[in-house]
Image (cartoon, rainbow, N blue to C red):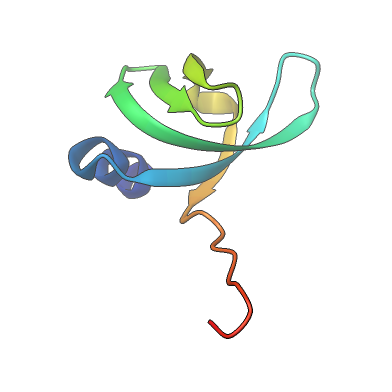
Length: 73
């Protein structure tokens, strides 16, 4: 997961994370990492359409975003 977060930062790539929010709800977010801190990351959240801070301990997994293919793709 560490590698994916750093690659998003370096290449300005969109990634998908599964995140446990403050209410212990599992959420899926599509983000682009802007800054990595010791205990958090700052990222643009495409779902909220703004910059958000995510605690690293609450990020359960990270990976490539889902690609939706159209008919004939």
